[in-house]
Length: 246
Image (cartoon, one colour):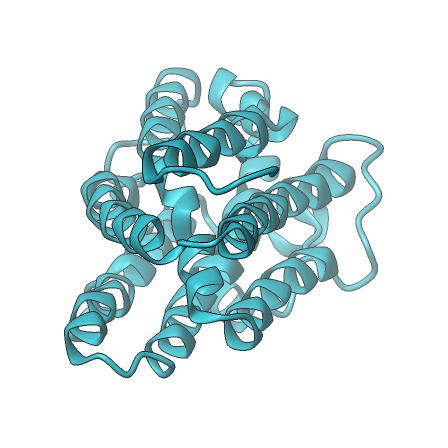
């Protein structure tokens, strides 16, 4: 950056980052969408993605705890309700468990997260630490990957239903609610960022935050590809379809 951008220029720069770096272009994601994976590889994806899903409310609680404005807190806390629900039988986490159930994974094993890839845990925990330690503006900006998720979800659902006979619409129910939620949340976060990133330094920090978050998502798929596609090196103690699926 050489000078202060207008809010519209900042938004365009953020969208350019998403187009280049969001994980919709990762080889694992492309294989998932096109039917190039087997059931065991999709089980590994669902199991590891659960670790990310179950840390989202923790991440959002960390952001919420830093907000001194009640209106802002009321807006942000909806994200936690979306994932946790108001009871144990609803919410995004429960719908993700329905996905892993549908893929034949043991629920206790999934919820324990014991067999999640180490690299997945490192990437996700780095994200939680980021929102705890960086400025509130940077923490909010890191959520802007949600700008790009509705289109990615649409391609994922369409591809999985078309290409895998063991996948049903019920299995993928998690994704039904996410696009409108992500659109609502990203619209709010984008407005906040455009209003408060009012110096060159803040704008650069916002761009770097989105780059970091895209890297977190990309790194998770890197780990999956390395362990379960090529070269197929599953780390000791991680999920092994030959051992951990009856």
